Structure formats: C-alpha cells, structure tokens
Length: 123
Image (cartoon, rainbow, N blue to C red; front, side, top):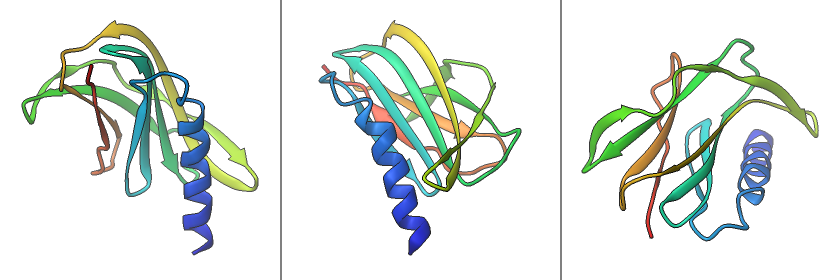
C-alpha cells in the first residue's frame, strides 16, 4: 500500500509539471508512467518515469497511428535515478518541439519491460 502511495505521488509530480498546456497529459501502465507537455498537436517535452530503483535503465519514445507502430521518435536514453521523499524512481525526458498527427499516440517503453503507457495527441 505504501508503495502505491509513493507511486501516485511520483506520477502526480511528473504530471503536475505538465499541467499548464492544454494538450498535456499522462498515463501509467504498472510501474511505467509517461507525461507529455504541449499545446494542440505540438509536443514540447515527453517525460518517462519508472517506479523503483534500476540504475542503468534505458527508455525510448515511439509513435503509434491507427493502433499500429509507426516509428521510433527517439533512441534509447539512459535514465537518471531520483529520490523524492525517500521514494526512488528512474526518470528520463526528451525536448521534442515537434508536431504530431491528430489522434496519434506517443508511447514510452523501458528496456527489458513489457509495459508501454501511451498518450493520445489531439487538437
């Protein structure tokens, strides 16, 4: 139960930073979370969060259209280990400053993990 509270707090911190823009949003799939900051179809930044301490973890962002994989938006990026209120997690972010198609989905995945949370890009 305590871990779930910490996960919720960490995701809230991740998403709270994303709240000023209309098109911003977030999603979570198990221990993996994604936050997107942007306006309309323009994505300024994507943030990835992995619950727990896994030094050396790597993450990347993919684009999905019509429920199918389209392309890799980024390559693998090493995460930074963070400790917030004695809760440890891995974090990575990418400054994209790009437009994406309406109703496309940006997804985050971590190496050696099956979870892939996605955020839908909409006008």
